[in-house]
Length: 290
Image (cartoon, rainbow, N blue to C red; front, side):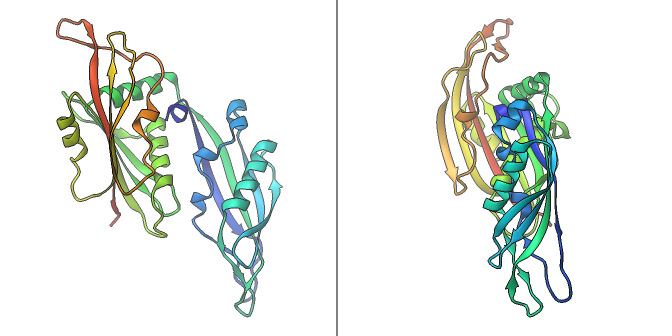
């Protein structure tokens, strides 16, 4: 999550177009193209150099529905992005094969467009998200996961221990979390699903368990908990993993997402900075979209 908050990488505007289909012939039909590339596929060199661009490729699809060849039709202007696109298309893109006039599987062609785009997330927004996730009672993201692996209609709710609930559209960092969760959901083949991710931070395990169980009428995929101490100087100590429940193995471990550096320290009633132990957890729920 650290890299995603500081430099969010998005793949947007992916489109597919048949290059030819005449008479009774059928062009290849793409299978879940939104899952062919993910934010994790952004080439490391392109991230370091902050390269972005749009590439059009022509795909030759065999009778078995697999890509036999990828040709750059319109370059992104960056060789590393062009090569990554064709390599990933060849490895992951699958189709229902084209049909000839007799209805038999045949070789076909498709044109695919991918935009590699970087979105900078400011240090101020990153710090704000860390404070919200670590020191508010509950942070909740509710969004829709489309059948082709895209997150949309994301709403973030901040539920502090005291004060009113704050509800806003998801900022860049939260939207990145929603997209990464969506990309890791079990594939269903069709239909949209509502997804709810809850992150809670409490001073005791009982309150944490209650916060993570507050959603009713949803299917729980997975839940994880952990504990750590922030000292009086705002430095986080070792993170100790707790529960790991559920049938879905793709929920990122909490202890692998600890922020670097100093956090805002807590203060006692007299305004003195004090150490504090936190019990954290996050959980993912889903349900069909009516």
